[in-house]
Length: 268
Length: 248
Image 1 (spheres, each protein chain N blue to C red):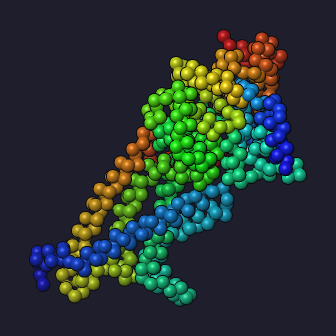
Image 2 (image 1 turned 90 degrees about the vertical axis):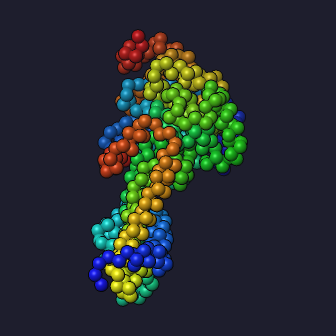
Image 3 (image 1 turned 180 degrees about the horizontal axis):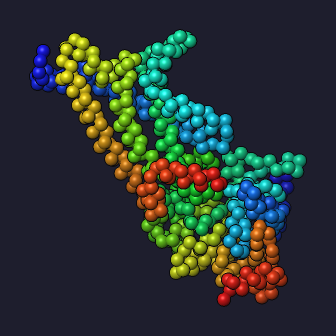
């Protein structure tokens, strides 16, 4: 019943949050990697997460699709708790098969692409729709070919990942995530493993996606992309959210010293 | 009855009684390998589970099976168990003993294969919303197969010869048939040499099949990093992967 009510509000209000993160803490053993993160991402927004390495950006992304369990706080996607159930205000972890269902709504693109090396580009893209959503093979393949077209690789359907350049692999990986029709896309340093001349082709696809209204959370050091596509920039350091501001304001007038320090190092 | 008798040798070389024994060796090995793979997969998955009880059961099974001689296991099953009312015939005992034993060794090979698949592959499959069985079937096992198949082939090679141990519980495989033939024909050397040749032919044929299997499962173009990983010694790969898993 709860669920129906949430869906109704979601339909009536386009500004309804897609991702809600509330006071999230995460430990790796004794290491306190996330120290009370809160943020909200609304439908169609592009959020860019920046910060020095080890600041917890990637961990936060991995918590949002529950690849990592959170130790405290709440994460909701599309209004539903992600990977857990709430019983009297307490988090109760769901079984892996239940978590898997929640993850369908969240697409993820990895730094190292993580394409399945034993499958062709097309097979990579249809793996989710066929094996998770139980779609018919012909339908899934037709959709996959459209997606390959969209990422600019219509001729690479039968290529294996090892036969593709890094930039091409990452574009296939984006298509693979999109094939699940996610509510939000997470990008974990999508261009950091790429040779410089391949970065643009991946960023172009991401810009195209943002133009189409996809909700995106992007961890990146590409400030050009941040300026061009981000609604808001979030600066993280040592597991805390230091500063959050609309993109132009963030670059023009950073409020925190820590942010200024960081920006002076990455902007030349 | 001195000296080597060529005519006797050739007579035994195409002897129906021995050929039947060789056939028993083949089907026994094939059935044991099938059961062993299922048991091994189960034990490997239990061993890698986060559930301590499942892990404990798997490790206890490996400890017993790899810590005692197959010969002793077979004798306990066939000769010992009837004392507590469990009566298995020769074929059942041979199948049970060999499968339990083989499963333990295969489980470690399968585990090493699964651990050889990079963590990012698990992440990517989970991020697509795959549950554990789907992830294993669609993403992990096809990649693990490349690492598993070569040692698996070697194990089957060993198994073809190991089945001869079941002769002690009077399983009529190749060696036992040879011994029985000797008891009526008294040509010890010729018959044992023929039996040895049969084993050699079986092993050689299997080697050909194995090469085909390896070519088949190695066909997909693995990234350079994967190839480097395969070149790494299995023991080292296992050690490295276990460290990575512990860190998670």
